[in-house]
Amino acid sequence: MDIRILVLSIAVVITGASFLFAEGWDDEVLRGDANNDGSVTTADYVDIHAYLYLGGDAPSCMDQADSDDSGEVDNRDIIYILQYTLNNGPPPPAPFPNCGTDPTADTLSCVESQCN
Image (cartoon, rainbow, N blue to C red; front, side, top):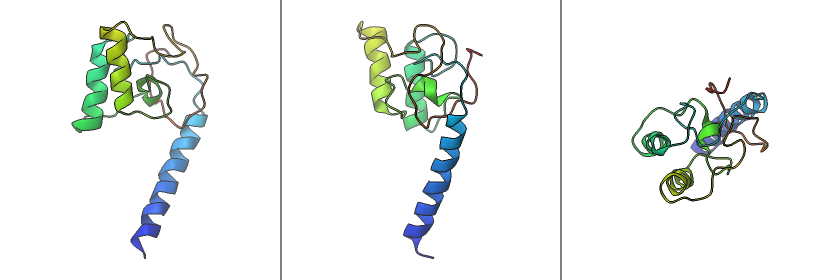
């Protein structure tokens, strides 16, 4: 089997499973709360950094870790949290500062949220 077909097949299966799981998520989340402790602090930056760059565990609620609501968890989320917590930057988009349902459709999963 051609390796490109194998990689594409795996990507489709993973993406499809993630999409189906995320579509069913209607529970509440708190944007920016990557470590699921009920607040947005520099500790959330540490958890996202560890996940992305140090092989740490994935946040239990990727939708919460998406602090800029871009639909993916990446370096921009780290920067967003640091700007908010240390430089009086803009707060995370809704749902914030209280728990609520995410108004933005994306493919991020949420296995567990302290909001529920």
